[in-house]
Image (cartoon, rainbow, N blue to C red):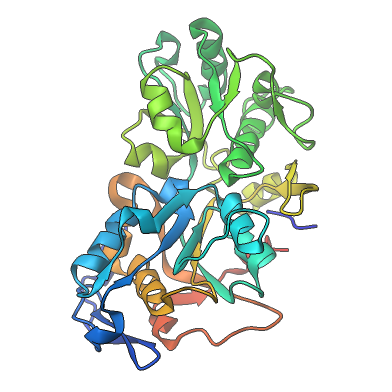
Length: 375
């Protein structure tokens, strides 16, 4: 059973520009750290396409990163058709064969535990954690009951707004998208841990105990299953009153949102937060179709280059860009994500592959508190 458990740009103002060449057979993709140079062997990448599969909540940042790489590296492209943004558990299913087949040069997941627990060592050999973002409540500001909402009162404000507006809370499928189980944990933490209540916010919108298989209440005016990628449109059109989602998604889609207590938002890693997270779990349908337990953990995004990447050199070039100062600036724009600099490297424990030397300046070992959450 598997268990899920500030801008850095200023730090790099004095960096030394160096040429890095990523080898790919006889050729490779060459670029400057921070400003990209023509390919070392243009014929090696001519007409190559960078393919990306990533968590839906990265759809506001990754296309910009891909455009930067394409614009400054002759001979490559990354059209919309080559970029797929969906639930991270659906992505995992595509690699393992339980869902539509996934083949991509890079894969980025919204839970850093997924690749080590479900994809290593068969499909990937390592991952790099590159960013964090908390859960927030994105809401329709035209609903009067949301007036004055803040991190201390958002739970009962949400319940009150749904009750009076007749518009439901949009919820996500925890078996396909980590945000589905993360919203459950934020509800539990707010209601049971930080709002002085014996009943969690969870109980207003879900049936069953939170550690069992969570099912939204059977009332379309209270909670409805939706796709997270549709959250912005659903909120703006008044189809739902609100949704618990990642700050990165709310910022990218210009949504009004209320921030949470850092622990409630799964944005903390101190001893108190980690103890609170260890006490929480829920159940989802796992990759093999059976019920699996998921535990709470900070929201940390990670990226990897799969073994069968069609263009591994391009994947590695994109990964390096994600970890560069330019990448950090794009990820952190508007406060969307907090870049992890340097990235946290995690390698397969059973058959660690050689991590490309080009990554050495960009990464450091994953801290012990984070690696301890991977089972």
